[in-house]
Image 1 (cartoon, helix red, strand yellow):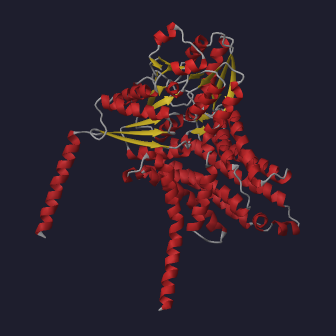
Image 2: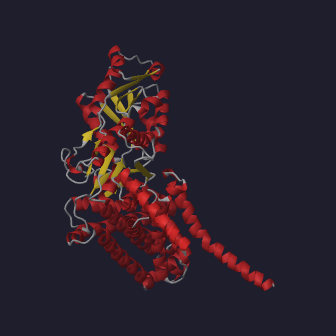
Image 3: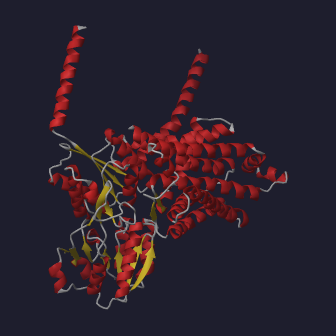
Length: 322
Length: 301
C-alpha cells in the first residue's frame, strides 16, 4: 500500500514537470491538407516547412507539422478536413482549391491559410482580397499568363498558333486557358486546345495538336503536371518547343518558363502561417499573388530544337539549364 | 479520432449511404452492373449547386438533383435495353458523358456554395450547433430514403423488380416487362445517388466534377462490407446493412488517416483503407472456420 502511494506521488510529480515543460516551450500545431501528390504541390509543402524553420518554427522542437493527402479524391479531402478540425490545430493549411474549400467549410473559428489556389474569389474562399474578414486568407498562384504569351512570341518570332493541353475538369486550368485565350487574342494568335481528362490522356492530346501549332503551352494543371514528361516527349518528336507554365517544367525539358518556383510559393505561405501564429487577425491579412518572376531557360532543349535565345533573354534569365 | 472527426465521418458515411442504397438496387436487386453512379453523383451536386446559386430554394434544388440523377439512370437503361449495348459499357458511356455535361451545367469544373443558402441554413439560423444539426438532418433524410426503398421493394412493384434480377424469363412469362423494370430500377438507383451528390455538395459547400471518381468503388465496398457483416434475407436488414457498410467504410478511411502513429505516411492512405476493409471482410469468416474446427475437434474426441 505504501509503495503504491510512493508511486502515485512520483507520477504526480512527473506530470507536473512534464506539463511545466509544455508551458515553457509552446509547440504550435500546423495541419496541412493537400489534394494530390505531384511535384509542384509537394514542393509547396516542402517550401512551407523550410520557410517555417527559417522563422524559428522547427518540426520536432516547437512545431507539430501534420500532413495528409486526399490522393485526388474530394470526399477524402472533406474527411481530412473534419479530422484536422477535430484535432484543433493552431493553423490549417489547404494546398489547392478543393482541400482549401473543404477546410473553410469545416470551421469558422480555426484560421485557414490557402495556397496554390488560382482563383480564391471564384472558389468563394473569400469575398474580398484586401480584407478577407473571416477566418480564411492565403496566397494565390495565378500564373502571369500575359507575360508568358509575350515570351513565347519572343521565342518564336512569327508566332501564329499556340497549342495548350489541359484538363477541362480542373478549375485552375480552365481559368488559365481563358487567360491564355484572351492574351493571345490581343496579339491575333490562335489557341488550339487539346483536352486530357486524366494523365494517361495527355500524350494523346499532345499528339493531336502537335502538328497544328508552333509552340505548346503547358499550364499549371495538375493532370498535365503529372504527365509533363509525356507531353515534352511528344513535342520533341514533333520538333516544337514547350513553354512551361511553371519553372519546374524546365527541369523536365521545357524550353523556357517564367514564373515562380512552387517551393518559393511554399516559403511565402510560411509568412502567412507565422503572421497567424504571432496573433494577427486572419481577417485583416490581405490575399496576395505569389511573387517572384524568375525566367528559366533550357539551353539543351533549345539546341535540340534549333532555337537560339536572344541576348536580352539570356541576360534576364535567373537560371539556364545547360 | 476526435468527436468532431467522428461525427464528420458519420455524416459522410450517411451521405454515401444513399450511394450504397443505389448500388444495392442495381448490383444486388436488379443484377445490373451500373457504373453510371460515377457520373450521377457529381451531377446531383452540380445541379443542386447551380440551382442554389441561381436563387432556387435549396429543397427544390435538391429535388431537381434527384430528378436529374434519375435521368442519368434512364439514359443508361435506354442504351442497354433499347440499343442492346452491354450493361457495363452502357453505364460507362453515360458516366463519361456526364463528366462533360457536369461542366456544362456549372459552366466550370468547381462551384462553391460557401455563404449560399442550403437545406441546412434554416437549422443554422435556429442557433443549433451545425455539428449536430447537419448530422441530424442528413440522418433523417437517409432514414426517409431507406424507409422508402424498403417499402417499395416489399410492394408488388418491388417484387417484380427483384424478380427481374433473379429470373427475368419468369417475369416475361408472367406478362411483366423486363425493360420497364430496368428503366425504373436504374432511375431510382441513380436518383438516390444524385440525392447523395446534392447533400454532399451542400454539407461541404462545394460541387466538383472530380468528386465522382471512384463513387462506384465506395458504393460497392459499402454494399459488400455491410452485407457480409450483417447478413440476412429480410429487405430492411439488407437496406440497413448497406448504410452501415458505408459508415464502416468511412470509419476505415478515418482510422487510416490517423495511422501516422504506426509509421505510415500520408500516401499510404488508400493501402491502409484497403487492408482495413479486407480485415473486416475476412475476420468473420476466420471466426466461423475456427468454430467449425473446434466442433470437428470435439466430434473427433
